[in-house]
Image (cartoon, rainbow, N blue to C red):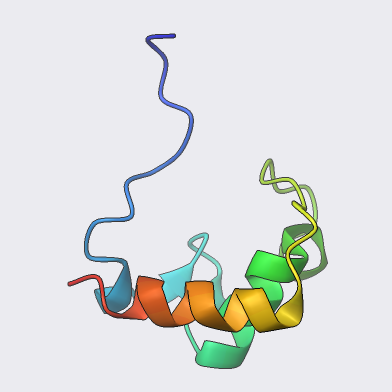
Length: 66
């Protein structure tokens, strides 16, 4: 596929907003990873069945991307 599927995660830890709408806090990021549609209705990002515990680990990784 040649189309863009998602935005780059480079410098994610420096972003002020998640999905361009939600303030980028640790708790919001965890909620976004677990249930994107609950944070931004109509989002194209699907829920992937990530547990809250795994979401915390993913969020910590994303936060360190500068």
